[in-house]
Length: 115
Length: 114
Image (tube, rainbow over all chains, first blue to last red; front, side, top):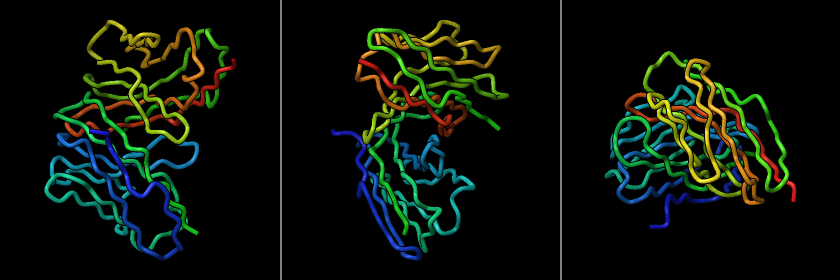
């Protein structure tokens, strides 16, 4: 297993277009998280899945954002009608188990630039 | 609301020397976990060290150790015998509760001088 992988690594899109990112977690990990990181800031939580169930969404996740994790495997994050403020690094992380304290394994992220 | 504060945006250390990175947090929870993550340039974030709040003993991982002061809500990272490969952004983070989501500080950029 090569860890958490994200695709694409970079995405440049025009304002108003839709984009979709993919995350493949470590295979046996039941939890999957999406974070957003802007320049000079720490990652901010967006949403998380336990298996295929989306259990929490941050208020940062506007109606233009949607995430799925069909069959509890890979996950997709879609942004509709992108805005310049969506430009950021989108990080995916996965972990095994329940409860706090579990080690999260991060992917390299997808850097989105909206022009 | 839980918050994590890293007040130093940048630090520099001479190779082979020791450096301490500061972090404070605010929470009303009694059971929680604290983490230091390292994010090298253009590479993924990796866990450096983890501390359980109910454990009084400070965590250590080889050259990395923490000074956990629960009453002061302080969680600093000490890097001994600094190496060039330690240069990265370091994030202090916190989690609690069933969802295990992480709350991060703004991070600190550590440079290592040869």
